[in-house]
Structures are given as C-alpha cells and as structure tokens.
Image 1 (cartoon, rainbow over the protein chains, first blue to last red):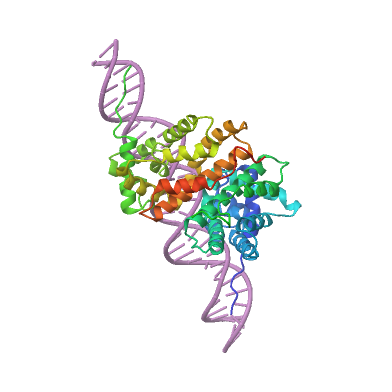
Image 2: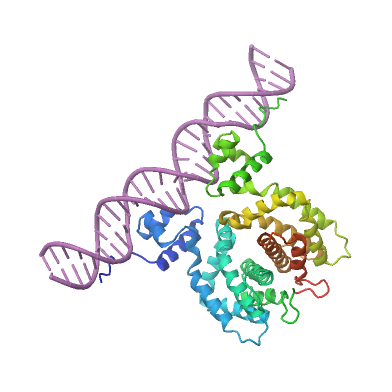
Amino acid sequence: MGQGRPAVTSKGELELLALELFAEHGFERTTVEDLAEAAGIGRRTFFRYFPSKNDVVYGDFDAALSELRARLRATPPDVPLLEGLREAVLAFNELPPEAEPQHRVRMALVLHTPALQAHSTLRYAGWRGVVAEHAAQRLGLRPQDFLPQLLAHQALASAVAAYEQWLAHSDSDLATLLDQAFRSLAVAGDDAPVR
Amino acid sequence: MGQGRPAVTSKGELELLALELFAEHGFERTTVEDLAEAAGIGRRTFFRYFPSKNDVVYGDFDAALSELRARLRATPPDVPLLEGLREAVLAFNELPPEAEPQHRVRMALVLHTPALQAHSTLRYAGWRGVVAEHAAQRLGLRPQDFLPQLLAHQALASAVAAYEQWLAHSDSDLATLLDQAFRSLAVAGDDAPVR
DNA sequence: CCATAAACGGCACTCGGTGCAACAAACAAG
DNA sequence: CTTGTTTGTTGCACCGAGTGCCGTTTATGG
C-alpha cells in the first residue's frame, strides 16, 4: 500500500510555534494566517491540523483524559471516592519541575484569554464526564444522575480555582493548592451519600 | 435639549423575538441578519442593541447580579456564610410559576448550545465576582484570595449542576435541587476556615 | 425654519471557519 | 520508467460574526 505524501509539519510542532507567537503578540492579535505563514503552510492546511485556532492550545487533551480515566480506574475500591479522586487529580497534575514554566505559560493563556476561557468550557465537559462516570460507578448510580454530575462540577471548579491561584502567585505550589481545594469537597462522603 | 430620534425597538423586544427564532430554528442556524430582518432593523443596528449574538440570551444580566449582591448584603451577620449564600441563591432563582416555561427555554438554550455554553463562562465570571466579594468581606479576606475564589467557583458549579438536572427532568423542582447542591458545600465552615 | 441630539443603517473590511476541487509527493506494481 | 493509488497540501470562493466610518433620518427645542 502506498504511503502517500508525507505531512509537512505536525500537531506538536505547530503547537509549540503557536504558543510562542501567542506569548509574544497575544492570542487575539495572532491570526491563523500568521500561524500558517510562520509554519510554512497554507491557511487552509492549518485547519487540517486543528479544528479551530482555539484548539491549538490544549495539546492532546483526549490523551490526557484517558490518563485521568486510567488513574481513577486504578484506585483501589477501599479508598473513599473523594480521597481517590483527589489523589488521582494530584498525580495527574504532577509534572517535572523543568516543564513548569511552559505549563504556566499555557495555563495563563487558557485562563486569562477570554476566547480560550470560554472555549475551555467545552473541553472541560470531557473532564467532567470522566469524573462523573467514575463517581457513578463507585456510587452505583448512572453518570447522568445528580450526585455524580454535581461532584464532577464541583471537582472541576476546585481544580480551576487552584490553577488560578497558582497562576496568580509565582511562588505557590500547584499540588498544595489542588490538595486544599479537593479536601474542601465533601459532597458525597461514601458513608452518608446525599440522596 | 433635543431628544434625538426615538429607538425603533428595544432590547427586551428584540430579545423576545430572538428567543422565538432560536427556539424555532436553532441558535446556530439563525443569523444576525435573520434577527435584524425579523425585527425590522438593519444588521448594523442589531449590534447597537447587543454587543454580540450570544449576548441576546442573557437578559439584563448586570441587573440580576446587582440583585444577587443586594440579597447577599442583606444577610444578617449572624447567619453562617454558606447558609446565607444558599438562601440568597435560592431566593434569587425563585420565579413565578407562569414564568417557568420561558425560563426553561432560555436556560436550555444557554446550557445546551455549545456557543452559548462557552460564552456563559464569561458571564459567570461576574457572578463569581459577586460571591467572592461577599465571602471575602465575611471572612475578612480579599476577594482574590484563595478561599473566596474557591467558594465562588464551587458555588457556581453547584448552581449549574442543579440547573442541568432541572432541565433534564421536566418534573423536578429547581429550588430543591439548588438546595441540595448548596448543602453539599462545606468549603468554608465559618468555624474552621480552611487556610 | 434651523440647530442639535440621537438613533439608524449602508459600506467596506477583518477574521475564523468550511466545502470543493485541483495538485503534489511518496510508494508499489507492472 | 510509467502508471495507479494513497494521502497531504493548497487555492478559491464563500459564509457569518463583528467593527469603524460616515452619511441619513427623525425627533425636540428655540
């Protein structure tokens, strides 16, 4: 079978390039045409790599979700739901210290750019889905039931609040903030589940 | 002083008309031009009434925020923070039974249309601001501190989860769901505030 | 009747995003 | 070497949201 014409660049490469341009000139003022030109591809081709300008920023989000899902699935059944969730999210957000500056830039972009802030909501739906599914399974409920959904929403809220705080203080520790945020959740104590 | 040419329509009128068209043909497939034409105004004029197509759906959001703020301010100091917040939000979301169908349509539009779901995030920021400000004042902290922000995020998450559940079940009661959602919050017990 | 204030709205433009159809580059089989 | 197939690239034309500019309309007040 013929292998066809090789791709001229890659999602990863394009993403790095875009993050640079966004950081330098701002997200809004960088047009798709700028990105395409910088990458040496046509405007039309850019949209073969990413469905929208917004999507450039989120890396491989689906892969990340799969990882979170796997972590949750790996939680021993005797660990309380909220505790396991907290641990999974903490582990999920752990990253090598040398990757931190890059991550800060990316998250600052996501959390401080209106267009991306808005777009994130759509991405977050997937994250909530993973959490709700896990919670439902642990609680013997369906993912669309109130409790799993509520927990997923609150968990996401906690994570986002932690991230915002982390971004606002360059000396803060993300893990500590996430830990604090998730410890404040008591939605569905496994003992006394809210009906 | 001359009063100038009278407006040909009004925000409220335009909003009603738009909600009808959105409900009938869908949000995405209704263009601004359609709205303008139906309202008997020019496309350009539409953007004098609303800064964007998205914004048509949110009614007078600023007024609503002011109302919430007022309710929170009116909370007696001896009522615990979370309790007062819950009561304020419940009261805020109370509406006459005859207004419910309309409210359902509007909220379904907001929560089920991707573009609006995304855009809502930006509107919600104001809501969170009001809550964070109130919490900060009650806790002797600054609005941008972690605890008020965390609480605001979690409170919003609770409200949205309740609304989604409400929309999913035509026989459900919004007040009950909101009450349940907010009772699950224990972030900042006034006694033992998380530091 | 004229000045002024305020809303209307056409025009042209930018930018994100899409459908289509032509083209280019790789490889494999003859 | 040629030809066919596969797959990626790209230009073109188009749509819809949103904006800046500027002339026009319609009211009121003198």
